[in-house]
Length: 347
Image 1 (cartoon, rainbow, N blue to C red):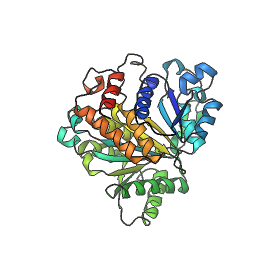
Image 2 (image 1 turned 45 degrees about the vertical axis):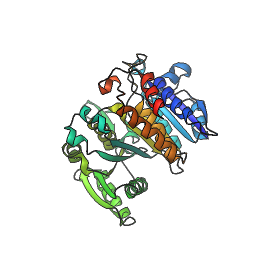
Image 3 (image 1 turned 120 degrees about the vertical axis):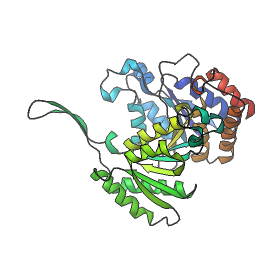
């Protein structure tokens, strides 16, 4: 089993190192690693954020453990050369369309949430986000209007096949949890969302055991703050899912705690924390590696078929937090390596 390690930029190398330490501690037979350059680090080394060698490694690997991309030094580059194009390119080339972002409050961290502890404590949801379409992949550019004004445009679109496959992902995830699926769209004003809603309803006929509801995205954002405990699984498009999953991260206490998986139709996946490269704290030892460690657990569960080992990691993270492990984002003073040590101590 080959794991491609793509640390990327900023704090990426620091947090991926800690996740690999945890994986190594499991002593899984046949697990091997290869490193690849992505993002700003790749651009500075070879002139492109997703070099051919990296893409070839990604295609060979059973799974990808990804750190983060983003480098202020690259902000002035043409868009196709910016670090973020690495993750978009991997999603496109590997067909990674189904992004799973769980959000659950560890009891010890309920007080870190921006919400009241009794509200935050009820959060146990999964956001299923489509990641290979929508406005991020639509036609885009700049033009000049008839009256001489500069105008930027980004086309939002989905076809029914794209909606159908992510709807199946959402229903299957809900079936494996508590049997409730909320489809989030903006069907009252967007034709793209009207198609989304129509297709999700069609797919629901295959899942009579799952209760389907619909919610406009603006209301969903409000409900995540007002009553997040009502949600089991949320399925939504690329743009809305990007925003809602980041909001959910702060509802559970820290963006440094949320893992994610992005899967294609064959079960190959890219696993990454949902936070960014945090260049302001890179190299200071302040980065929280727990989201990356939890992403490694998701990798074991979804791509490598090792749910027992995944459970071991998740229980070790929970125990470390119960024992008082806290990085600066969680109100503590432990550094990145200390947090990794805390997980290893109880693994």
